[in-house]
Image 1 (cartoon, helix red, strand yellow):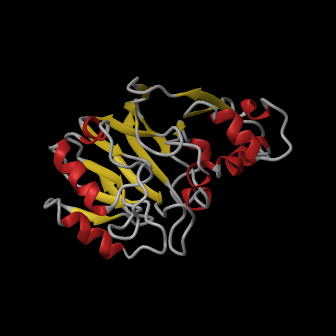
Image 2: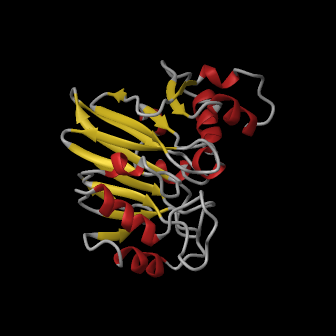
Length: 255
């Protein structure tokens, strides 16, 4: 399984990275399967440096804030108005309740259901696995002001855990346990951001992976451009002694 960081900036696109978007790939049945976790603001452009968006097999959204889903509007345009003609199948787009309505409203002027011509919208359910080619993807509800999910992605014996946006919560333990790579929200900074129920800080991310157990590598992500990444890294390192780094756009991990 291969993970490519398309975008990792928190809350809005930054000067060196789009917002949340992660490409996960695996080989099976004689071809490469391509799953995208989130498609936030600014991510559709750099995604095209890695593959044609027409080659996606599924898009899974952690939640419906624009920095995680707004570039679906651009992907709709690519598919709907492709000069070479309509694609032979709709693209599965899975997310929380109301995904189809939310994305359609962001694209002003569509009639209800118009996006259904290009996207096969499906609602994810807590702890009910999703299968896409070689991938088993388990959504687990997390703690954010809106309905939100983390995703545990398994293929070929490898495990990727992606928290999406969350504060600490019980589901982080089964989400993160024994993950080869844990991609964990670290938008908040200890001593600066004290509002509960929105994001993790570096220290809370570190404690979460320690509590879960068996994590191979911790990668901190979703940092707004105003964060100092080294501060977040240091706060995590005070709790977690294993391999630790900060996500960057374009980084590739083979699991």
